[in-house]
Image 1 (cartoon, protein in one colour):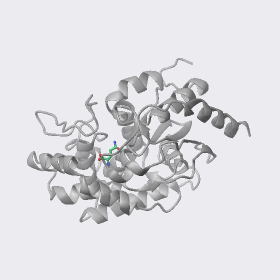
Image 2 (cartoon, helix red, strand yellow; image 1 turned 60 degrees about the vertical axis):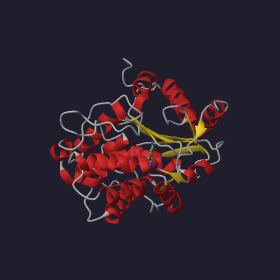
Image 3 (cartoon, helix red, strand yellow; image 1 turned 90 degrees about the vertical axis):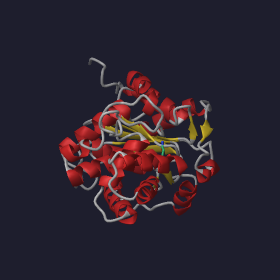
Image 4 (tube, helix red, strand yellow; image 1 turned 180 degrees about the vertical axis):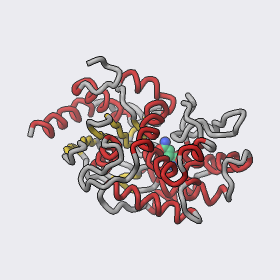
Length: 306
Ligand code: GLN
């Protein structure tokens, strides 16, 4: 098929984009091989194409946020979730202590403050139960039993001062109603879920397919939940580079500090890229390049008049 060949060509073109550095504020992530590079494309019909280091495992990190948001919406309904977490882009870095003045709500579910609040809304009695509920649900999306990376989890817990500070702040303003340490621990466990680039493309394709897993045909999230998730990915998924991303790539997306990026073209395709070096916004440098190239070649930009 010409598709894998094309994908190899894209990877080769993006390989010399080597700016940025591997995340090291989580010590375990600093051990990643910075040369890794992969891309995968999955369709709502169940096809999956990939190239490069497509079977290498890494932690999902912030790419867990849209899926946790979907699960929180599923568990609580839109109104209850909106009471706790806004939908406005913050324009701030992902780990900014960014809360609305009037309500104390985190500005959106894609930054850490909003994602910690989101995690607290997943049904479960404690951090382990919420993380496990998340793991099970996301495994259905990936059509594979995913596991947590214990070393990444422990490592991030040891340096989680900033996320704990955010948790305590959220507790003070009443957005969190329980022990902030328990909630931050569950959030960090959620971020330590291990995936491959192929898994991520499959998960993205489920969103592209309105919540129905392409290979199994199983409905995992309803249409309106997926619409809500894709909307916040569009405006907030790439943090303080969201405007840049929307203008150049033009599809809803989410990045993680381990180097993963997903993008969703509704009704068309789910895409994932992976490369550990990050730019100043915490987005994969080469991952962004791969998406720019794919968007141009495949005419994916949602604001392009056909
Ligand atoms: N677990 C990471 C954190 O909370 C996720 C951040 C990210 O991927 N941008 O810092």
